[in-house]
Length: 246
Image 1 (tube, rainbow, N blue to C red):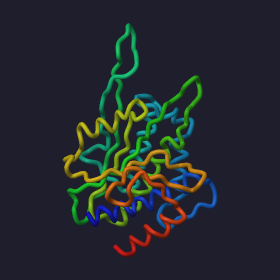
Image 2 (image 1 turned 90 degrees about the horizontal axis):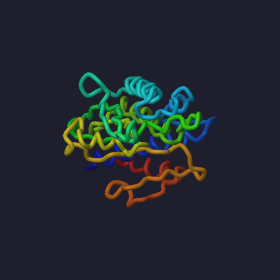
Image 3 (image 1 turned 90 degrees about the vertical axis):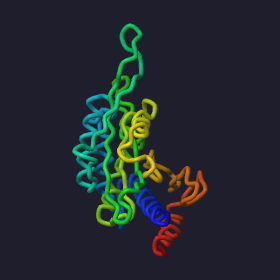
Image 4 (image 1 turned 30 degrees about the vertical axis):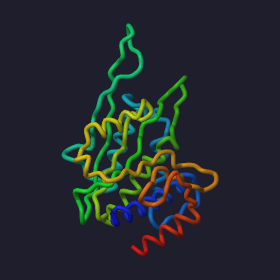
């Protein structure tokens, strides 16, 4: 549990830096993450040519190809030969009152742990958004290009600072259609479900005018949640202090 706690702390620190970088377009500095690269990733994912990244669309496929490219560049390995974990679901109304089948694809990979490689900490975010509506592209910069870009930043750090436990990175599709990708992942996990000890999910981390990061659901590891972390105090002082002691 000590190593799980330590990695969760480090990931939260990186997440805090990613959140701050995602909010500011200029004068971004970090000793942990490549802040300019994170901003470029966010901007790419939320650009008009991604067409809102809706599941089972051309824009969603383009976004997925970019996520795979960045997984590779960030040091994330696939399980087997492919990062892609396809799934199907039914939603909406088709012709003659039918419910059409739709197709989504999760992007999943890992960084192997140095001490307990068969024990996994999941770090996840959904990469889809709501697409084009009334001829307007819904770019989804905060929801959730911010969390997806942070996946790459976290992975890049741990690719050179090897974790004790393995890290499983999951970019979920179909969240906006009812958590379809995460449900598919849980229904058919790529590793034994019992080997996944915790999931740090990043959603809409790109903005908070008061410089705060919300961490919800931490029962035994860091705080009793829901909790509100001040980036200026908790992240920079308390968590860094705990990392130095561990």
